[in-house]
Length: 444
Image 1 (spheres, helix red, strand yellow):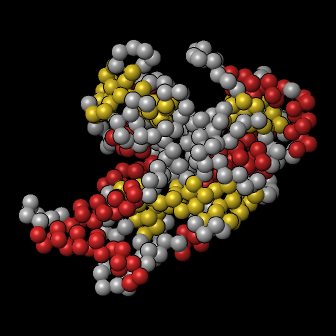
Image 2 (cartoon, rainbow, N blue to C red; image 1 turned 135 degrees about the vertical axis):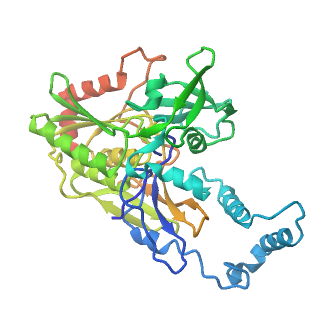
Image 3 (cartoon, rainbow, N blue to C red; image 1 turned 120 degrees about the vertical axis):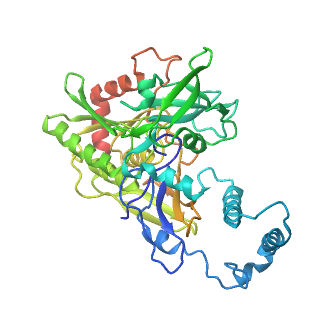
């Protein structure tokens, strides 16, 4: 499988099911970005991305306009020509006009995951591909007035929230905390933006300064001035719980490096004789689908991990790898999810749930069941990200805008007491329930 990027479902540094960029046909071969971390998705049907991104031959008198579409494109070309011939307000920047037209086409789709980026914006967006990025180092999400995540656009009924400052980051050093609401960036409100647009305002080159207006609890707004730096997120945390009897893995992203770390830490837990495992995907916005496949395969061993459905309705299965280290049905596994678990996280959780391999504990997941592909444009044309497919669970459930429902739903108190983790506590109870364990082994 080709390496792919992750979901910008709403977190900095990562977010959604995106595939790697391809270059528009121009006599050059299609090229894919190198493996690293970022957004989610080429799936098993790589031919979709090799053949599906031929944008049409330039067969008409107008550049790039197929003869069959001449009538539809006539208003566009009339406008273009009139501006070039008659506009008297100053010099015409044709590059800016082209970029504006492309942006308008993508925006007209009304798809929150498809977008156009100018070349400088695109270069900034791809900073995270190597596993590090330049910014303040805080994961972000959107939260509506009723407390649910994933709203858009930002405004009085939809706020930008810090979900977690990354350990050792400028955000953590400055004192930002989970739950902080971001009111403005450099004195400018975020109303009307998506979470991606807000993230792009907050990020910036190392050494530059950004000013955030933050509301914490019911208090008055506070100002935080933060110097951006290079941030290297830690994606996998591992420890032993319940007097050393339970192996716990928290996965914060889905890079290939994270997948390798999961395998390494799983081996360590198994070598220590632990037969109860918790995979914590809460707040995980996604990553490479290759990483999702590898992590799911550690527990499943065989069978379908997910399905991909293209624009024509054709479905292709992606099967588990055969080298999983935790496929023994005697192992008891719990996966933790919440409203911040999206994209690749949902691929893994959905695969283990459909296979009867794990008990899902927590809250409804985010619900991102679409696949995006980045396509680079020639010259300084930038790039656009387009929704090109859907992914479905092994049982062919499409969870977009719905999410995964946990097998054990945990209702959180409001507020959650400091230091408490009711979802993790409930997971430990599930693992301690011998009846639940026997049922899980039978399902596997």
